[in-house]
Length: 199
Image (cartoon, rainbow, N blue to C red; front, top):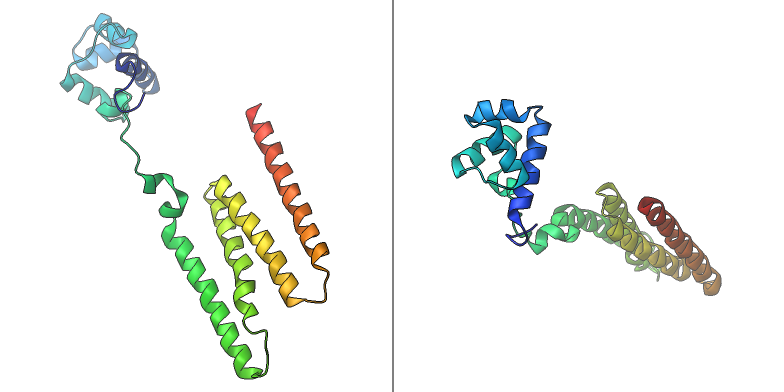
């Protein structure tokens, strides 16, 4: 139950019973601690009665829960807290900055050593799969698997683009066909994992 919707009495009764069991107390022992009878505790846990606010606070302290948690109430989660991009923005931006600064350094070095080189700008293209690959790996570590799949997919296709542009003599059809095979393999692997988890 969230935000007061639903039967809060049922949620409270369930949480009180689970909380008592988690600390290893019988209804009689809990009643003695709270200066109530075991019948009162039983009523609370069946949803036939509700402890007063003071007792609810004490029970929360005993069970390691807030009164809101005992009542089954959860605060609204802000969008920024739900979205992994916002939650890990500092790390992702730092990684992106390091990769792009490295690409800029490579570009400047190539232009300095080989003034006539025309492909120095490819350093920025090559940086893309590196950046998305690192981001995807980070999302895997954070267990944000959907974001990891998206980032690693972008890393795959930007890697294909980098190979095509850096090695112009290669047949683009083979490069992208290889990328397609890898993408299908990744989709199949994800499907297998999801099916395995649902069992």
